[in-house]
Image (cartoon, rainbow, N blue to C red):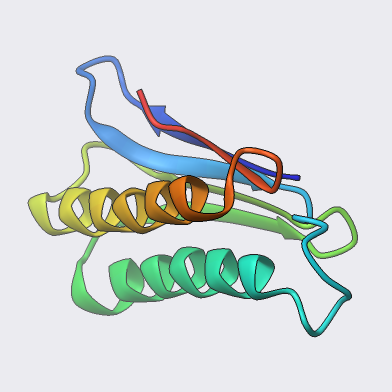
Length: 107
């Protein structure tokens, strides 16, 4: 199962996420849930890097299928929008395929 949690700062602003695991929906290379989650998370990171001046830390562990992404300091409005859009898509995947494959914790 893929687990994704939002990270917020002391002011309650969304500044990142932690994602871990494989969905187990299908074989590697055929798993549409893993592919969808990967596209959303990686595209969000790339968009924040390309379209904002926000600095961030990003650590990935391919063996464990983990991504730990966190904006340094206060996030720009654009970064918040991009992160919220990512979580909107992730929640849709969770609702479509079920918590058996993906669990999204976005408080």
